[in-house]
Image (cartoon, rainbow, N blue to C red):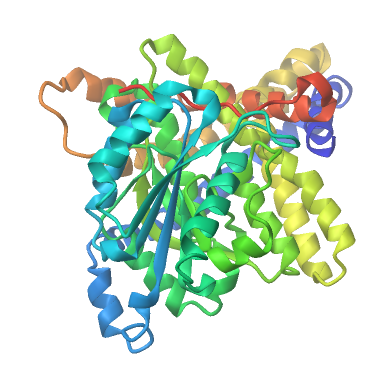
Length: 487
């Protein structure tokens, strides 16, 4: 109940204080805008630093680096990569593109173990897609298997976590244990089935794993790019996708605050020790980090790869359905606030985790979800509240007169970060397809100007709904929602 309670308390107090003490709210909003301007500058510096590293890593031959480094050249070929691709009802075209890119990886194919993890509840269509994938790609890797996650198992929620755990247990029994592959020599990469890896992904992952201080107690996080179908997605969907990408680029330069998100990699030995992913939650991608963190007494971290993977931008047959899907996707991501209760409970039980770490992560997590739900509303919606609700006496003051001008000036300066982000995003776009019209590029830049409204509709509102549902629990809880893939 804590995340939702803090969010609603903030919104209600802002309204009440705007009525009772409008001067205090006006000063607070000005100070908050200044804070946000400074934070925008700070994050923009991290964004550009990460972008520079990402571009450099994308041009590096990481197999050559593995063979050149004395720490890695004798041992890197002992590392196997287990790739788990959970799938529900995605069409063959989406899945086949993923496997085509996987096949092109600049890494020995005899070290890749690939699992296509389908759901029994998806019916015959999923079975047909899986068999076609097996027929066309089954002999391209060291081992390839299809697993079918049974429906209606006890104590499970239908979703990625339960499917991934089933798949990992099957491959552990049928391949890893059968072939006696040492657990410590296996890295697991769990990808959404639309995730396309760039050619050097497994090379840089292996290099980072072998050269890090404690690779066996680390997760490895790439940068998510939503580019697979970027030119088929509405301009607004592209903007939201890039906003997510930029946030994760910034986080790559702030490794002390980095956790896992969506597609990522981790050691099989540690994963098997905790019993794989939890099977009754929505946010399995972030929860797995906290499972490992609590289990290993705080001796766990996420290491940034500064290297991308590419996924589908949110796109549906119609513009309005795309908007609905975007909202639902953001709401599912915001449901990650369910981790707050898990972490606080884990911190309470585990006395071996240092108190300083508990305070650091506890505050950081709560502040992150609270900011997600409230910052955009404070910035773009609450600035006028003291003037509307503060009464005639306040509206006649110099502070009330200057409040709109001051906030407008500060937010105009902050919006320069949005403009620079729009320009930077152009460098990430793939070549334009034939027939792509110039008007589409114009709409793309216009959509950036709608960022304040976008941050509220597709940022604050789904976060508020998710936190409110979590606080009310019961029938208001969310199940795992699979983002439809449309090409």
